Length: 175
Image 1 (cartoon, rainbow, N blue to C red):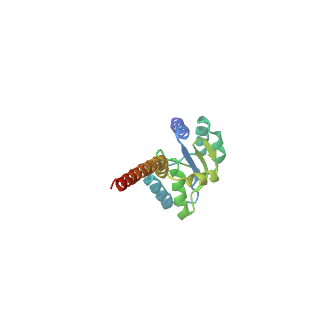
Image 2: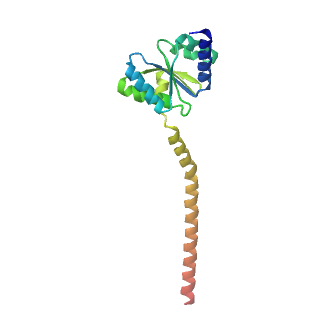
């Protein structure tokens, strides 16, 4: 590989590392070719990118991005798994695939600026999806409004019943 190609790879990976909300580092050792193709297809269906880069180039990119904490995880074959849409999806997609094949193994993760090992990745993949979180947010926003509406309806209902009772008392005295 020519020096310019290597520089382009380092620059692109450094940009990916510094611009991504989540990057999962995975060890894909032991996956057969057909399993690897199946993994790539399943990740692509979920809008997740899978990229293998030599560790030498990955170390340069990590240093360039100011993420020296990733250097500890760049041992052996390493794949970089990212998603532009959902920062939780790379960890979840790898975990779903690994349930069947027991590979790839998550080595480390960069999530929202925090670097950690497999335990951080486990916590990340347990988070609810973006759609679920948005649903919960809308529910939380709507709940006080629904409560206020119920309270106001109760006040109006009680007021109307009071007027009805006063009217029936007046009709009873006049009649």
